[in-house]
Image 1 (tube, rainbow, N blue to C red):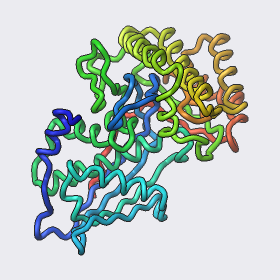
Image 2: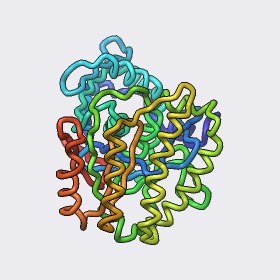
Image 3: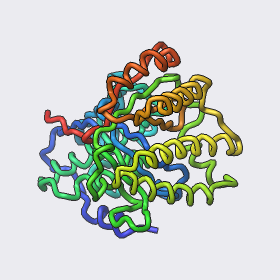
Image 4: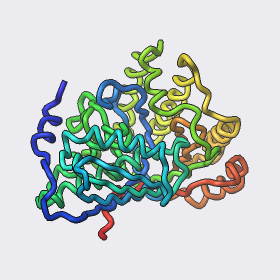
Length: 366
């Protein structure tokens, strides 16, 4: 069933390319994000079964440049490179995604696109490379539409980019904004929507304004199961309905904690969500175990360090073995020493990413 927003974006679309167009381009940097309330389970059109909450990162980003030219044959063409090298598997996925966007960007049907992306972090390893990658492409396409139409950027630019990014990757909808971002309808939150993500509409309390995220790389290898496969396993999961109710409750509790400076609840809900996600994967049919012994050792040491020092430090994990160690900026020196002395030996070749909450995407003027 078509939504009002879907019909609106299609009705407002730019039909074709100007006759004198030779070439135009757009380039954006877009961040990965780390979900605190997990999105796990979806229905038609990349819509979420439960609301999610994340914050955007500063250093883990995708930079994407899209060059558009009229297609010589009037038929859509695409070349895709990752780090200046052809990547056929990604190209196939991106081509399918962009072809699905023809109703929103009809001019693409007669275009030849050249896309080149670069990630600052390992892709396909549970650090939401699809979120940063798809959101950067969506931002480029929306910017190209502006250039073709000649219409100045409006207040709905990022809302549309979030909608378009969602069609490629659900979590990508959250990466078009900075700081804390919610996605998915939640009772009592007026800006919430299944169709696009939104920044929070209230003042963030002091403890959560400057969060850091140390991404501890347990393995740089491709995940054993893709996120799409994981989402599909929720359709017949025996705990699916209970999970969606748990996520809605946790979403409300975490939003209240962020608003009221409740660090204890923030930690409890964040860790509960991470372990619930992996519990769902382990109890799926077939089941998947993505955590590794080093992941569990790091979790145990984080909890012990917090208990012994009283430091605001917690963890979350996406669909992979890598651990996101989340802490407040004012504890940075103490936590960095903890990472280097106790956690870094469990990281693959000692690798970890020193990251923090970021302000969101950035357009690169060419």
